Image 1 (cartoon, rainbow, N blue to C red):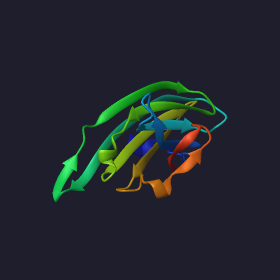
Image 2: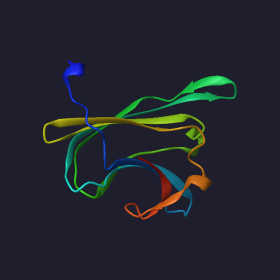
Image 3: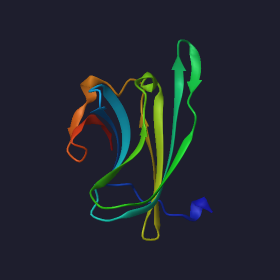
Image 4: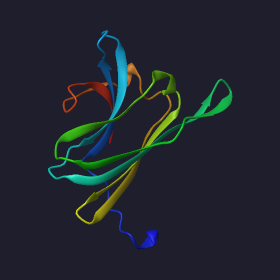
Length: 134
């Protein structure tokens, strides 16, 4: 039962929406998971979706699921590209993973219009600018 599982706080794992350049030197946006810990995390499952409203109507994206067998210490993995036309929505990334036999679970939610120039910071692990969610 879920009530019998001890969920410890997630530390050292982040989601970042990073601005990068493609081969035509145009801005593109990608979503990454970062393991900033000094240990491996395994069986990482990420569910992503967008929801909210725009132009007076409810909007929702498809729900995507991703699986990463393992994420080494101090590394990152591309989850998915993201279109800037979705930045006005809530962009949710629900992350679950294991460290040894302990499960960890956290929702990372980028609120509407939080992925903007004013919130960009340099993310050394990605060597680019983006919005980092803790």
